[in-house]
Length: 103
Ligand SMILES: [Mg+2]
Image (cartoon, rainbow, N blue to C red; front, side, top):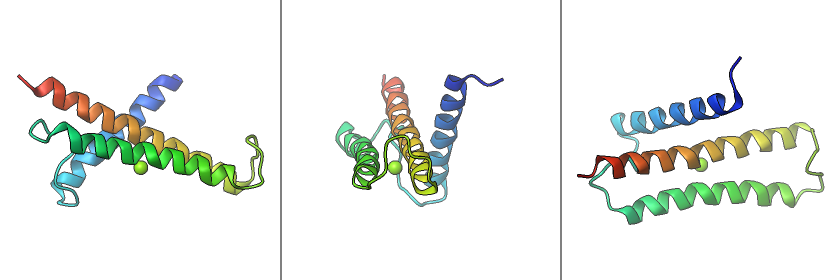
């Protein structure tokens, strides 16, 4: 049985690999794992992903559903929240990789 931590980290790894594939396919020019990119644009990327987590929460707070609501709209919102959190973690991991690659 997969432990919750293993499941979450597996999702983060998959997202990291997806980010690198976006570079290879030319969709984006770099990821936060690129050691030659300055820290400031990386902070912007991480902030953008963090902002998407906040937007998800704000959108759900403005509805008249409770935090424990299991309607399809709320379940979809929780799925999206999880995806955004995985993206936040993957961007942080990429940035760590860049720091580790510095001499
Ligand atoms: Mg996102």
